[in-house]
Every structure is written in structure tokens, then in C-alpha cells.
Image 1 (spheres, rainbow, N blue to C red):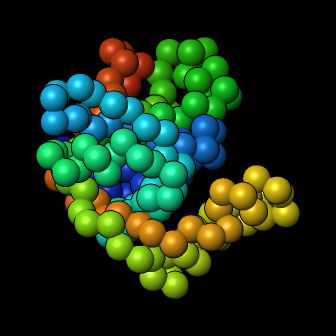
Image 2: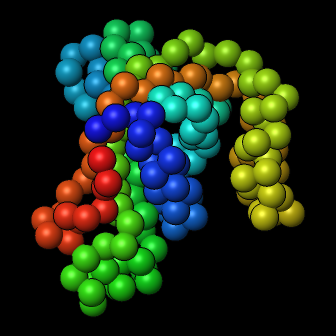
Length: 164
């Protein structure tokens, strides 16, 4: 699938995925070939093929990047009503899931703009103790360059979800 042509639909699905599960799954592979999946809630998609995430709590991902910077990100719209309507109608009204393949860049300090984008995303829970403990002081990010989009197909139910 063409990244430029389908990026808007990908971003829409990522927003729905975050709203319903508060995270995405990022898969990496160790130097010995062992796969690892990490939930990441701070991934932000920008211009076509570009994204970044705040790397504050991960320990395994950076170790894997030393030998293999390739990643796969899975986003799934887990909304109950979204799935129930699809099951009743026998088709999804929008793509239910997508995989993005890419390459992780170097860890760096977040810009003030990136921090502001993140804080806007989690503003609804900024009153909470959890926000203060986890998200109030996010400072380090890692850029990701995506080169491939692979939709998740669920037979007939997803036949008309990607117009590519």
C-alpha cells in the first residue's frame, strides 16, 4: 500500500486505536532472533511515513535497536460498538487494524512542540496521580521512519475497508 495515499486513513485508525486501548504494540527482534512486543501509548504519527514515540519506560526496545532497528507497529480499533456493528452488518465500516513497518532512529531529546502534542493527547487525565507519575515529564523520543503499510484483513468483513 502506498504510504502517502493511505496515510490519512492510517492516522484515523491510530486515533481510534488509542481511544479504545490507550496503546499500540511495537514488535522488535533481538540479536539472537527472539521476538519481543511492547505496548507503547506515546506513538505520534506526523507527516506521511514519519512518527516518534516517547522512550521513557522501555528497556528491551533500545537493546534490540543495537543490532536491528526494524520494527512493526500494530494498531487495532478495539471499540466494542465498532466491532459489534461490524459483526451485525457483516462488514467493517472502516479498517479495524493495520501494521506499519519501519526503522527506529536515534534516541534524542523531545522538542517543546512534541511535548505539547503529547500533553494535549493525555490532557483528559492530567488531574490524575498516574499522569503525574508516568506522563508529566516525558523528555526523550525516538523517531521512526515507516516504509510499509500492511492492512489486517479479516476475510469478507474487511473487503471494502481500504480504498487503495
